[in-house]
Image (cartoon, rainbow, N blue to C red; front, side):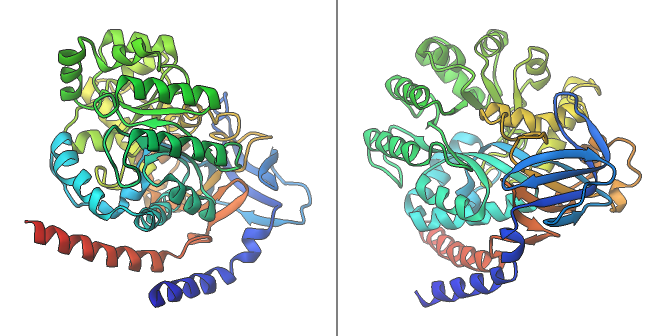
Length: 461
């Protein structure tokens, strides 16, 4: 208790000097190279954006009008929409590196699920969320889509930090840390949706885990709930070859065809991974408007395979980027993830023109917003949309010269160049200083927990 009180005091002291910046509602960002990511992919040199409350009210070029609010001079920086991470398990930052170099099934069954059952509580989920938020903010993410447990704890931390998130309780048939029965899981899901639906930055979802952990009744009931509340339906689909082979053996069809027969594929469906889709599956996704969350790092690390993303794009399937959890990535860096996605598919297809830099940037921003049903409020910089944006410095050796902003960002930049992050008009990081989180205190708490987990693992060996 004394330790927690000291951390609270440290946080209050840290935030005291930042209140002026975070409370100022009207803001002007000027002298930036603006990458709007609008439908024309418009770039504005020496541009400015005016924000009032939480919305963009004006975008222009040249000298801005007189302004009395907070002014940020972004000379030498890119101003763009923040990255939208369409698949994550944010509290799993506390399990980063705990079980590496293993195939998916062994990783889940023998390591991740047992350690989750032993160490997951509302408090550890909250702590892992805080750590993940630090990482996401520092690397330029302004919105993420999460499937995990103790969703109320996640939402409280996300709201406190000021991040935008789509959040759903992972629905599985067996007991988890946060519930004992699937009926209890559905009750948690409904209560969560009813509390948070319509919130400014917290957007609820329904999140059945996968076809191999959820019964057909659960999958259909989950979709009916998502449809009745008009929220996203988030599920792992065809992540590994073993999952597809097992489905064909037990159900006589692929996971995609099985889900389609159940009637749970539509524009509200976000399919995480989608590595092993055949031609028929792709046509089904195209017909139903299903969104793909591409998680290249996790798929490579777990040796799950490489999703045929160029073929999805050719069929006009909406493809977005996700990091997956830090236990299988092992980071939440969207710029790194997008860089890797742009490169891997060129090498895999022997075609240097696939997933070009602009396409990759769309996947990380506006495509992600569309996948989450949030494209009307975020994912691009346009008048009337929420002020979810980031500034990226260009005065680094690895970003000079800059002939093409998209190429510079996708192929040259790294997240260390992210200087400022704003969500819903609120500064979460300014000049690389976090405004709503105490990084040092979070690290200290996580390392205390790590020691306990490590000691437990040694005893069980």
